Length: 467
View: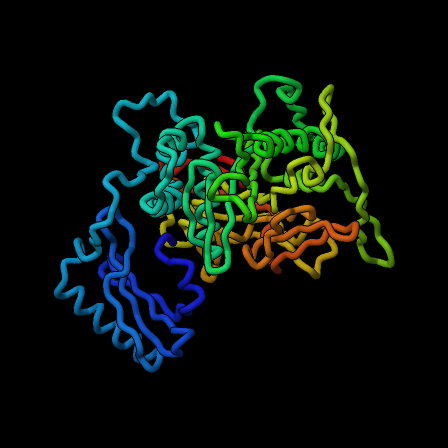
């Protein structure tokens, strides 16, 4: 997924995909949208493992002729070429990013428990495979990426990897910056993104977590505690300046273009008794962003959503103003991105879809999808077996974009087409969602057992937040 440049989506349509030599070669047949003819491209891995274009042909009259020519060329390459060096292009970095390589001198006690889960557990092999494919494509300005990914910055760094993959799937070229974190470009598109997370509180009023259980407790939790958690993370990014006194949107890469904040909630990990916070706290975010809650009434047999303005959020002795998009400086934030999928579970599922499933492990996913035909505000439930024929999943399907009605540089919806888009217009919260978009989900790993009772891989269940 690091191979395609954004321009490719505009000039060519991919018709079919091929592989040879135990997947050491991959290939694609394309339709040239401009010349209305066909061609093929063969890719091989370069010195650090990235698939790169090595051979191609164009101006063929039909897809059939292109596929016929490609098959002959693949056979020739397998027979005559040294595939191990075919992809070398003399431009590979001397120190490629390897997110899973632990230095010999590393303090194992300092490694994050979720990183160790990803690194060591057999059932996590799909996630490891995906991360190994992503790593060589990363060219971060921040030299601490690997160290923080393996240590206490694991949640933040995994969230950034997920965003990178999602932006690439949106058809964007992605540059990793020091600050803000991303610059995303494509023909007619140029914007920057700063990523952040709602992390656990170790001091202050929010250190005492309410741990809601009942419906009433959860409702109060989403009205008070969680908006303050989101507000703390977002407001700190809104007011942050560098040594020259410049905000994120004032820096060279961001000036005069849309600037976005991307937030995920990692403030509470999963336990055996309760799911992690990401499964249910997204409803608190839009309340804080727009300064609105909703009341749902049934009128003439249909559910009607009625916005109710709010001015503040309170938990204990702490109170903050509501309406992030109405705060000073917030007009410089074009939109806020949220997803509950920047987790190990997502990387596992994408690895399973790509063919990296661990033998003896079943991967099940259950949750709720958006449906225009559903009268339920929770969507419609689903249960999917990831190993079944026809199962598909995309990096972008859980991305939600909350548009700022006061933005100086609005973000066009077409920029992130396929995401769930929210906007507050004419006193109403309006949502544009693809049919079947995932609202929330839960992933379960089921491992087989030997006759002696020993597990080939320990069974577990997990939600979108953490194992």
